[in-house]
Length: 146
Image (cartoon, rainbow, N blue to C red; front, top):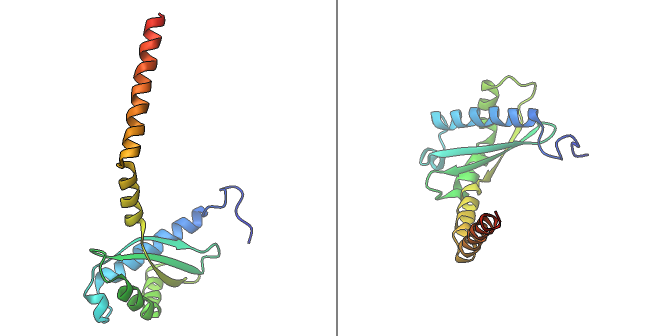
């Protein structure tokens, strides 16, 4: 499949919109707690992102249990209940066809923590201090030249 040249190969507006609709519907189903799976009833699950395939037939749902514990059993339980979840999501949406749901661990919180740690590292702080010192020196030179 050829990437969309208008958007630089990123997701289309329709993919983003449908992904957001699936995310809201899935979060509602999980919040309602109608699933009898003991693993899922024991956890509060957040759905930060849903990415749609270009043909809108597959929804990759990034999930994270509150506290980030027991992610592997939660994903297995979600996968085991994917047919029921798909049925419930389909009832809440007005789409021609309901996408297949696939579940993955959301690592965006870990990435954010990693980036925060990098920005606070001594090397970056030193470089930022050097840059601010250079900017002050440049300003002083301009003032002296006038």
